[in-house]
Length: 390
Image (cartoon, rainbow, N blue to C red; front, side, top):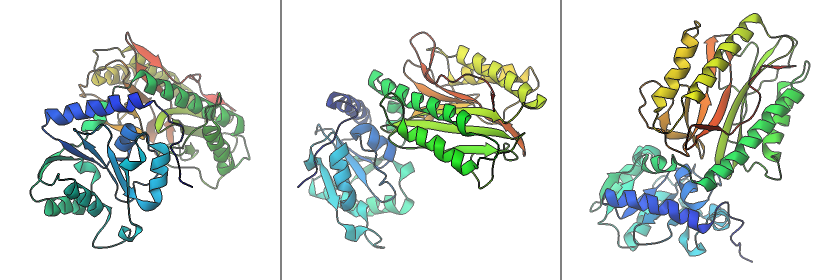
């Protein structure tokens, strides 16, 4: 028995639309073959979300061919046949003998395919930022007649403006993030272990809502409880919650690789005056930032609306206040920070991330995932902008 294509997250026409945009950029740079090694870009152009990017794999996009060719490890090829929109003949499995071989690896299989296809003297685009230096040297030495062109982040910039179909999936992811935050309000209690609470929150991320389960858990769960609220990227510990504890929680919903992040702060017992004061300032800043979102504004405009609002009340935030958001959580393109002059366009999506880590033992979190609409802002997440008092 052979595996067959499974249910597709998007219709074939959507993937062909994306590929057409990539091929347009290839033509602009006079590239007729593109080697895509970034896992999220592969997801974007094929629907593949299985976790196999820890070993060499590549998507070959050719201007002359409608469908790309996906070259990956033998044991992962059935997952590609199941998930990808392409015909199974476009899935090329390289042998397991190339795994952990110190002389040859999966990128040799990619080069072999390029040579056999008669492309060895072409202009070939390469995503340098996602390739190890030794792998790039392999391409240069084995393809000496090819002209290798840096295509770093080009696909990511195409991805930054979503289709309506992508926005619909991100709404589903946002609903899952909402459910995870609400589950946190139900299970964070004195005497409950951080691990047990996190397990329940993660179950909500996987179970999903409205018959739409989470299809992965990107970004895991960042649960920073007293006295660790001054940090941002620490998971749960072996500790238990106590009366008087503050809990900063960051979660994300995931549907078909698309993520929607959400952060809220909890207080077991009445919040301290300091926490309440910071919360009120941050919410005012959040609303100012959202109010600055509109087509034609810049990322810098949105960021500075937040920064100026909180600075008037004596609070500062050192880090950026958000980033382009979509497949794989962070899109390596635009940031909501002072000086980023990226112009906002309808259907761009961002995580407005207003975590503020003020002292080693004190910080605060709140965020929203939003879409730039035709006239302003469309906030995809819906949780109350409050401190959740337990």
